[in-house]
Amino acid sequence: KLLHNVYSSTLDVMHHHYFREDRSAIPARVMIDIFAELEEKESIKARWISVNTNAMSIDHKPADEFEKQAAKVIASGKEGYELIENGVYRRAGAISLMNRGCLGCHLGFGVSAKKDRFAGLVITIPILDQ
Image (cartoon, rainbow, N blue to C red; front, side, top):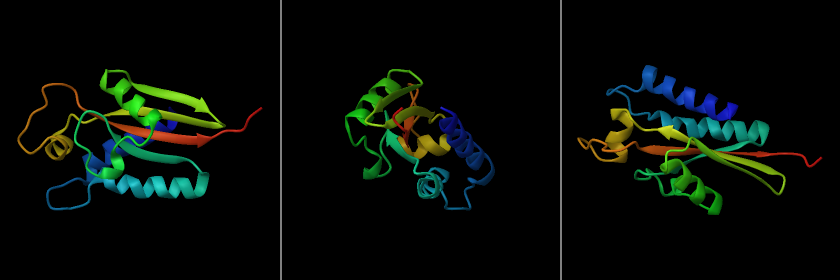
């Protein structure tokens, strides 16, 4: 949960400070580079999944049963979904897509959300069996 909060806060700050109409870098895309560095350094994986909006990449569609269930749980309004299995901890948490920058791409420019819209952040951490 701590890592989810770190990533979520980083995304919010990057949108606030760096996402401008005169620049083409999309913070959620830049975060993928952060995920790659963390995976290389710490063996902790992170990735985006679509929940109840359009996926911006085919790589963001829920890929396995855990991610599909997580998307359903998040879409229902719950904060997150987690599982420990085979020495691996996985958590998927909601990322709210309420600002215009996110919704413009995920729903279409000029379309307003009639319900809360979310993406998901999936974090995978290997753990030691005791």
